[in-house]
Length: 179
Length: 72
Image 1 (tube, chains in turn purple, yellow):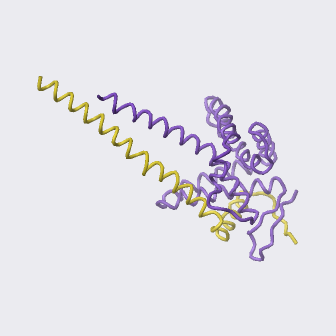
Image 2 (cartoon, each protein chain N blue to C red):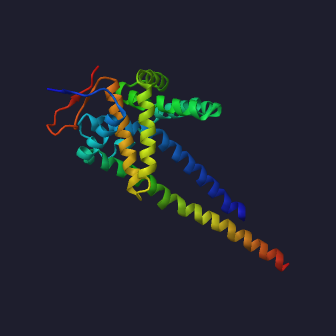
Image 3 (cartoon, rainbow over the protein chains, first blue to last red):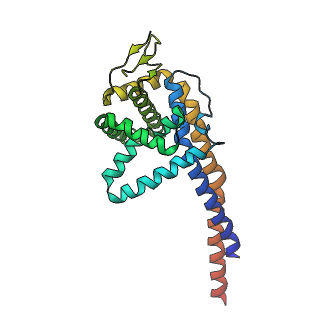
């Protein structure tokens, strides 16, 4: 009798785990898409974060490749793992922006990171620090910081690739990054 | 005509992010709300109650079988 009750629970746990993994895989690409569209001043829809729900292949590829590289690095130590996490931050943006595959995107992201690694590491530390501070604001603190983090990384990506950023000035003119 | 951005700095990057979000929040907030609403909705409305029913069900049957054995 107990097995009859336990079986659906285990099954539900499995479904839940798979669903969370699926969302964890597609959300970064969707967030990168939202970030790029909003930063360029292009129209966005409410479903932008789930844009890759029907074509999750590349997102899944990036998710597992990330895990495959990050896990051994974190086993080596906290610093190598953290540095790789920051270096790979641009991978979803490159996949969305240039249609690269997961491996090419990680390689491209590392190249971009190397061009200004000090600033990117400090920016990441500042974002984490602000997230810890603002998480004390109930409900909206962590939520707002997720958006700030995404906007800041999107701005860094557009700046490092010499692209135009819109919606920053009162005059409404886009600003161009020095190439 | 485009105006030129200063090179990437920590303060500049974060400042631009806050600046951008304060002026363009409407472009972000709907999408982010749909995301959180979707995930929390699925977790708390659909899955968690089922898991609780399962866990309490197991506890109930364990207790019931324990009681039966004690009675014997």
